[in-house]
Image (cartoon, rainbow, N blue to C red; front, side):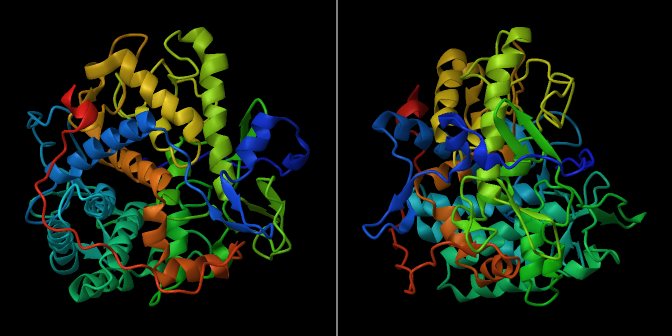
Length: 497
């Protein structure tokens, strides 16, 4: 996770977006696929209709992404590696071979639920993997007031690279922990461990005396980092978990108090000019499709005036993420393609990733001068849950055009440059994770369903005024299937090619 401050918010002078015309803009502002019941009320959100060909593509990418967590997780600790070679071979670079990422571990925990649900692995196998990780996190992994180090030695859990106790990476871990608590809701030990890990996190401590903003983290050498989560970014999951904490809650008045810089390309205006992952990561778990920041929401607007004491306006974050994705695709296909011929309407997208010059937080603004022709597949893949109509063609086009050079054992390589021929040999855990979770939300909505079945995030979003437009049915959820143990199989379809 990159620790940085995004640009400061300029004065809030802008026109409402609801008056802007055009089918393309309307499509980016309206929540997709709302199904209307006979009485005119929205009965829910229908899944995006996938053709057989597109289903096979998304399924193959999902299976390969899951394979990363299956093979690149330590069997004793349950910690998932920060990165790995896309051919599955052991790394040779000293000091980097077995370093785990706590955020990747959160994605990995969720990945086991997805795999069990699709019967890629048996449910009992998934349960044992989850228990291994939860037991280690609860009893052995070093932590400070419940918060974990960003990077750890995967086999021991010891702090790696003098990394910080990370607020956002711990939040992404907790999202995975709570997902397992609901998927395995009938398992007493998983429930006990997941609740313990979440409940002991002291959210107030990480505020470091601030009434509004979390610190980015803490180190034993220097104390709290000076950077604050004070600008819109991937912070939604962090604040949701803090507000909903059953033991150390923070005030709901912190919501929407962060700076909200506006950005835009063409007709696509949105809040938050940073890399695409800032729009993707939190909403891989938080289901904000049917939640609006007003009693009578203007569903065709991203920014909504507010009479709340905490802010002067509110944001429709799901519609905002749609607009941010469409803006990036338009930027690459219409503007940057003139400078970099490898870009097109179907080969586009950057987010924080590897590059020929090292790890880079691409896309801090629509006109980021560091953009050099690199493409990051997880920019499109991580937005499948927002804009499948432009993301699926992008994934297919990249796969067909560049093939095995960019697509390997764990799916798409982290980044490549179609203009120079460079391609990273690595897959990064959080990028494989957002690809898998976004694809699953597109196909089934299950990650959203499992995470939001926890009472804490529901309670937090209610407190901050993000009410459900259409309350969920008051009934017990259907029991999860109990598949028999099956042979692990990740070789259908494109995996044979």
